[in-house]
Image (cartoon, rainbow, N blue to C red):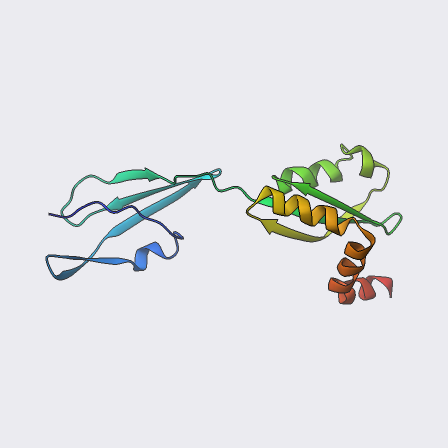
Length: 148
C-alpha cells in the first residue's frame, strides 16, 4: 500500500528521488511538464496505480527589470515587464513610442524578480541618478569595451 505524494521541485531533480515502501527502497518514477506558467507534475507509484496529476498551488510569475542601450544615441532605456521576450520584441520592432526613434537597441542587462513590487522598486531606483551610477559601475567592463 503506497500513498501518492505531492511532487515538488525541479524536474531535473525528480528522477533522483526515491521512496521507501514497507522498509524496502523503491524508486518512484516522476513525470513533469511545463505549460506556460503552470507546472504540472505526476507521480507514478511502484504498485502500478494510475498517476495523479497535481497542479502547483500558485502560478509561477517572474517580473523583469531590463536595460536597453540605444546604438543611435548611446543612452539607456530602463523598463519593467512580466513578459521579457514579448516586450523586447516590441522595442526592436519600434512598437514602443519612447524607443522607436532610438533604434537600433541592444539588451545589455536584465534582472528577474519573483515579486512585482520588488521589480517596480528596482526599476524606479535604476532610473535615479544614483541608480544609473550603480548600473554603470555594475557594467563597467562591458561599457568600457564598447567605448573603445
